[in-house]
Length: 341
Image 1 (tube, rainbow, N blue to C red):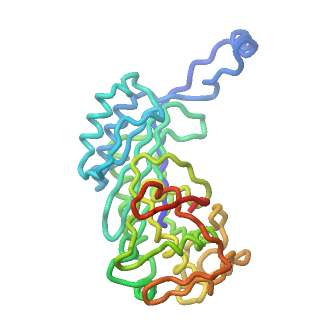
Image 2 (image 1 turned 90 degrees about the vertical axis):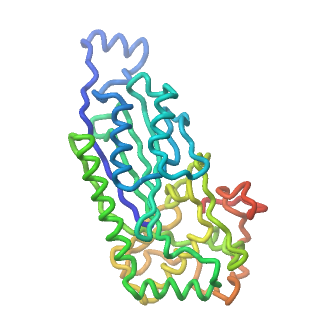
Image 3 (image 1 turned 30 degrees about the vertical axis):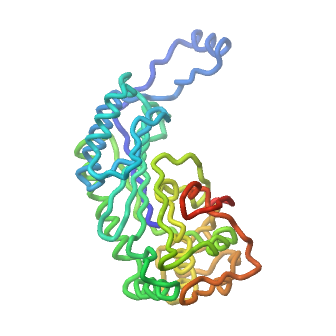
């Protein structure tokens, strides 16, 4: 829902170039030089990893979900243990995966703060083209205060979300995420001493649920039938479009699309100005911004979902859709399937 990115350029040097004749012979015999036009880090990945973990730890990210070196897992936290930064570093070091000094690295961390659950998805490339960045951080936050609760039915849930919007919309949470992101940038700059570091503004992006997503609303129970989020420390799938999001991969919430549905229709009804909010099609296209009208008709009309006292009522003409594949094997998901969601 709340998104930002951080890019970091570290000290690097170009690969040495060979003479024209040698380059031509190599082209004929083996094809293009894979290092042509590339530069590589001048410091080991392990050192950078240690400094990155120190930066995130100082910024409140106390839960390492996974660490992959060259796409191979070297640390996977299946128990959602907090304060495991030291353990993740120790296990990664002992694995010897970074023994060569320079390796591609991918790791994910989690933080709970000020009504937000934030994930940082970090990629480090030891070899990049001239216009690429050695480190990229994808920041994704969701608002814990707007999650469904076990003591409320659909009508009560909608009323609580509407009251939150009347009380200031998403401004307070965007401000909290912005402050946290600025703190992280400060720690990254101090630890890494980068050549350059850049952070995008925190932007609220809300997916406009389509027929597949609304069709899944039929599976949503309330009160004693409320379903939990699905934690996956090592997701196997790759999403596209608006659902290419760390929260979908690692903490799939079957009720998040319902929250999006409410937010979309509150904005369109003029009960929330949603200034600066981006509303996306599931395939990732921008449909409209807060205060604007959609660039195309919504695939599912507002009346397709009714909020009863104990259950949702979904229009009969919407498709019957199975559970999202992120819930495969969960005790509350006897079946699963369908498209991205």
